[in-house]
Image 1 (spheres, helix red, strand yellow):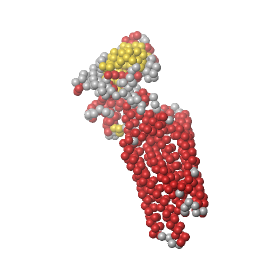
Image 2: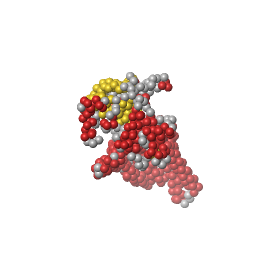
Image 3: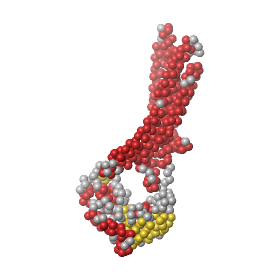
Image 4: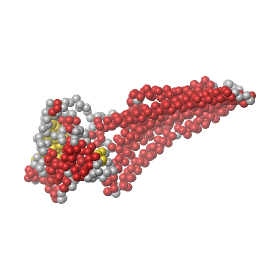
Amino acid sequence: MKRKRTSYLRLVKELRPYYLQIALALLLFAVSVVISVLAPGFLGDLTDEITRGAGTRSIDLGLVAKLGLLLVGLYALSFLSQFLGNFLLTRVSQLYSSDLRRDISLKINKLPLKYLDARQFGDTLSVLTNDVDQIGSSLQSGIGMTVSSALLLFGVLIAMFATSWSMALVVLATLPLMVLFLLMVTKLAMPRFRKRQELLGVVNAVVEEQLSGQLVIKAFEAERKMGAAFEKENQRLNKVMFSAQIFGGLMGPVNSFISYLAYAAVCIAGGLLLGNGLLGVTFGTITEFLVYANLFQSPLSQLGQSFNTLQMAGASSERVFSLLEEEETPDDSALPTVFDETLGNRRVKGAVSFRNVVFGYDEGRPIIHNFSCEVKPGMKVAIVGPTGAGKTTLVNLLMRFYDIWEGSISIDGVDIREMRRSEVRDLFGMVLQDTWVFEGSVRDNIVYDKPGVSDEEIREVLRESNLLHYVDTLPGGLDYVISDENSISGGQKQLLTIARAMVEDAPMLILDEATSNVDTRTEELIQEAMDNLTQGRTSFVIAHRLSTIRDADLILVLDHGNVVEQGTHESLLAKNGFYASLYNSQFSFGE
């Protein structure tokens, strides 16, 4: 409850830039309400005039026409005020939704990698889409409906008692029943609306997982199993959504039932008072109160609906603000730039030192234990070991995707924690085993974020990465647009990412299984290009194919987070230890 209240308060504060537009919209709603409250009085006068004229067969048609035109004008003005108020609230809701989507996008870029690693992408995507849309639609209808209904209810009460206190009490007799039902619906519906938003995120996560894994699903004929997994979550969502809508939708039918009771009470009580000539009740009074009974019941029903709508906004805002309040990657912009010749700082040489590094992804469960290593400038360092030994983790630590628990990692004697993360990452060109290309031209995918790269430089890089012939065969060459519909193989994607790293021309390199998705011939050509690229640069190569790192200056053999052996290819084979066992096993299975 406290968290929900906090979300509502923050939502109100977040809308501060739009207070003026919201206030204007509420003023327009107030004008519409005032007209709605005043109009039944003129309708009563019109009814009384017709009633009197019918008795004397002398109807003042001029007065009737005047009152009729006045009513038409009032209701037209009420419509216009309501329309303009809704227009302003719609504008506010869409602008605020746009602000939220921008804030979430910026927030995601500031979140540490551990947050994204610990959550399904589909659930995070649901916050950006479903929850933001829910907040926007709830603001659009909920604010106007709540304010209009509250003002209308207050105005109708005043008008009823000003017209006939006895008839007003008749209408008010239905109030306890309406309030009781409203409270019951609110209590039953809110938990279900909150659960609905949570399950929407779960279903989106399942869908995202299945769409991204369609190749594996079809290859293993697991469509039935995955379909059953989706159906399980879909049915959970269906049950919660159904119950939420059922409880939320009860307000309309019950309101109609109570309205009919109010109409009957007005007709019976009004008829008795009129027949006995009591309390000045006329046909016009009864006509007014039939309208007032509807106006009185309508805002109560709308208040119930608006409460449900705002509850959905509250449930969604909890998820949105929870994401926006997540701890960000610490700001290190105040740190000085270390390696920048334009600022008079020294050039990077590429000496890397790991000293007594301890790290784990989960607290209390270290996977890197007291790791130490000295890498001299220009060395090609290969990192090998069985799955789970900590090879990729070392790269994550070196790039400061994660910060170490103990020890230090330094570049040219400078602890990387004393450098900006952006500067640390600028020092490395990186090629990962998991290739990533985005929708855009071949040129955009290769150049990516590096300005001032000419087509001649791009073509030279394509030649070195054995990709030039492939690009020249594409319609448009470098301008060819890669999209999800295009046929581009995994090997070609990997070649593009290698070309991207070549264009980056960073002083150090990280290659994480950079040739794992290419054939043997292409691998040889890429290896030759990589040898040229790594000349004079400190490079870290994570490899499972041990034949590709025979020429490494230093091979680190990891097992369970510890360096169990280190040396050159020949020296490690001569030891006939763990590395020799790994190397010989690959050839035993016909690498």
